[in-house]
Length: 166
Image 1 (cartoon, rainbow, N blue to C red):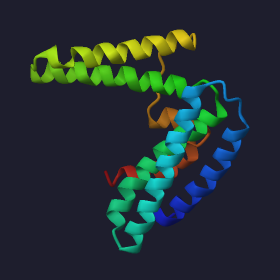
Image 2: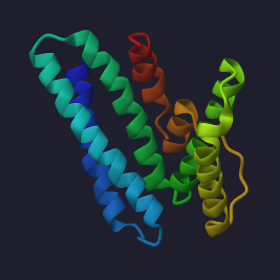
Image 3: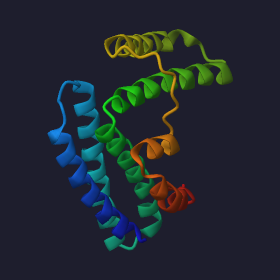
Image 4: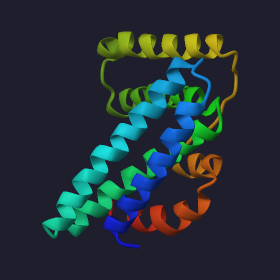
């Protein structure tokens, strides 16, 4: 499947996901924001792919298509599973704290400049866990997100291929 065809397929899936999302219960502001953020990102990146492909920039397109697929996995999983968006958001926040701590440990940098950021991120994670009554320690990498979305075939066929361009 070419990058342009995949982008068009993502547009089609995006439309279906947005239709499903508009029919879902809007109790979760985080979920609605998550779905909207990923839908907009897919749309913008897909438009970029179309422009790059038209200009013959196939290598750049492949890198962007990989990001489109990640967004698609997350968007579909969030639409199909009400708790996914919050679980993924918590995972992203906690993963960011781990990355900051690892960077400080690796570089030997003074943690002073990062203390407030770490504290804010940990506070956000804690408040989300409390608000949604979850203690799950899940790993929502691209494969796990595709699995939750029911798109493992797309992960194996498309994401794997486009990952080679990164």
